[in-house]
Length: 352
Ligand code: ADP
Picture 1 (cartoon, rainbow, N blue to C red):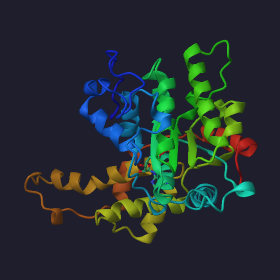
Picture 2 (picture 1 turned 180 degrees about the horizontal axis):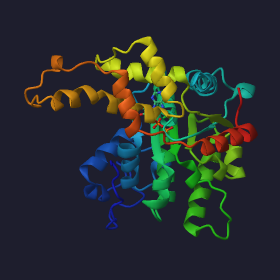
Picture 3 (picture 1 turned 60 degrees about the horizontal axis):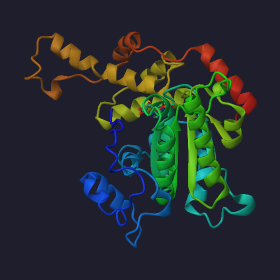
């Protein structure tokens, strides 16, 4: 929803402009663009080398829409996934916090793939990594590069890696990475998407070989679409499965407790967990939201007006509310799909 479409340039604010040496072009830059460029300038007031040949409006887009200064997710917000958390801590967080130790044979991989059904916490993990490692977080959906930034994707990719380079340590999270690095046959592949893919791989190669503190995380619900080149660069591949029964119980408790609404007995909680086998974290989230409407609907059904309703008049959320909500919120992942993930994990995943 925050997407800002690229504005057609009138020729005055494209390329080769820095806050210092841009001369008269500076007058034509929007104030917000100027502010954003100034923030990226080094202590000498100059724009870093990497950003000098990039279009200011793209740098601004990366800084304002893609860069998230405060991802605000911590490990404790994520239910279950202990294996993934452990791997990620060792592979990513420690090296970002102590680059001096993680050199030579301990030097970490720069590419991580998180794959699995939608709504299982892949994006949350990306944000938590940035939060825990005190890194700047960049989020981009690869499908927006191919669909919304037609013809400009390559430039945006350069701007993305350029800004990340100036904001190290940085985590670049590419959602739906399959749409960028898929194994489509080259003849059928659209010329522009091939160029975009090439640019992306060049940028990855660039920071892979240097001493940059940049980690690329790709997330996908369709790992089988990735080509060999993508797999080679995303050296660690972690399966992010559906939440276990304990993780589902945790999600229910965590969401309800935040609003002081958790009153379920242990037995009722266990019953809900049995009934929600196959639900993703995001399905659980939707389920709890729907169940929490139960007491409100009941109170209003008894004729109390919404404007006169007191919070104390509402009963707590019960097992019955969850049973009703189960008719509304169905699991979004089929068992066939799960099988595909498990098979791919056996073949290419980094197993425990
Ligand atoms: P993905 O990137 O795997 O599609 P997200 O990380 O965007 O999924 O998760 C979507 C929403 O689902 C989150 O905002 C959160 O509310 C809920 N969710 C998913 N997985 C978990 C989890 N493991 N723990 C807590 N909440 C979760």
